[in-house]
Image (cartoon, rainbow, N blue to C red):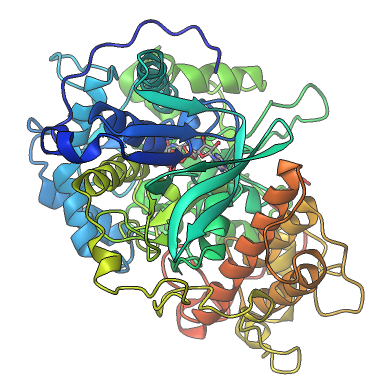
Length: 612
Ligand code: FAD
Ligand code: SIN
């Protein structure tokens, strides 16, 4: 991290620090990951007098957090008229499709204001409204404007910058140690307890010990060919935790953001440097979705139209494209109604980064609609944690996207992810400072044993056999029966990947990260079926039998080899969980479930959202 950052403000003492002064001193917390969860937790631990070590595989700013746009949801002491914490809880539960852990949701929504204040202590400044209070944005499935943002649509970068500035200041004061370009490859365990991390730095294998480890390694968008996530999102933390015996949950639920920019002019000029998400906040301000014929279609799929929950909007786009047999594989986000309603210049002021980036991509969104399609965005599932961010393995905490507290259910409510990282990152530190290890000392999990959770996707099985995939003969043609053979072909081709090379046949394309990502998009993406998932499981298992037969930690000193293995393991676990859940729920849509599917949609071969 070499950006020029101004001096950090002096934070007031973190509330948990008062009680911790005695227990924190001399105890080391190793935090892996420098997104919002890791940065904030490391700062709080250091603030309380613990020895905090922050390990990150790239620069400190390389994270999903950096790219967050819309903002952070929170009901503050002075909320929008009529808004309440109870409403935030209700919205979160509703978006989560009835699959949330309501205790975790209640806690997160109630404690949000505490951690917004915590962010401010570390120098984060949110955009102000006309009255001088924070400007509150509206996003899909929120019943009131309650999204705090910074720099308009640059919330993640502004938050991360401020936290990084504070981290560097704490390091300069000797309160915190930062290890960048340090790629965690394994958790060290002694007598059933996690006692440190192995990592690669400059081609050398290193190890750091600690009294506890907090995994804050983020998500796994790189599992899919189209993603909003940056390159660092490779499921590392999840894989490390699974290899250490931790329980995982809800892995079938992967959220696809409806509006990722589709670069239709790529090839005729320099492509964008990375994916470009068009924030949900743009729909919150009044942008609408239209198809290639200029028709607004979302009202036909959900009464809340563009502001329906994210899984509904992504799925509706996919189904609508399939219904039309649209060969372009994308729809359009029309932001012009915002200018018409709010006046010229509003769009540029409210969304300066998006205005610049779409312009760089050759689109003037004040005058023309923007081509968009769903892309892999956020993993609701992850390492099973309790309300104090404790995993089932002693000495191991997890917070942020890598964890599964259950707050996100089967479909995350917009802008609840940064909040989850804050609240549960803090709670991990509080638990560490309290010296408590209640969960594991109460025998919630037996050290060195398979995780007891029924929801564990790994379930203690050898991973090459964990898929639960039916044999080829067992595979029903339910998808074909429900949607017709043309439809079955259409689902695959909707995702734009040639099926012939994956599963079922004698020839399986050799393993590579690209092949994995194409397989996951075509077989385990927005629209799924038992048949496609079974094929995916078969191909993944064949790859795993060659690439990681015993699921051990690779010996290679090349971090990308570790990432590849982690992605393969995560893909196996995701597909395994998706196969087991036959009913569609939230972001997990099984097109072969007759009761819940639109049986008459004529999918056509060229309806592809992929531009491989
Ligand atoms: P991350 O921010 O992803 O950080 C993970 C860190 O772990 C990184 O520093 C990474 O380098 C490090 N790491 C990973 N593996 C290793 C390893 N093996 N060794 C060492 N370090 C490792 N959510 C919202 O709430 N509001 C939004 O407006 C919003 N907008 C978004 C926009 C985009 C484009 C994207 C991609 C996501 C958005 N999200 C948003 C989701 C949100 O940004 C993420 O879920 C959240 O930032 C995750 O934070 P985190 O701290 O858990 O992980
Ligand atoms: C967005 O700005 O649309 C992303 C918000 C989120 O992922 O919560």
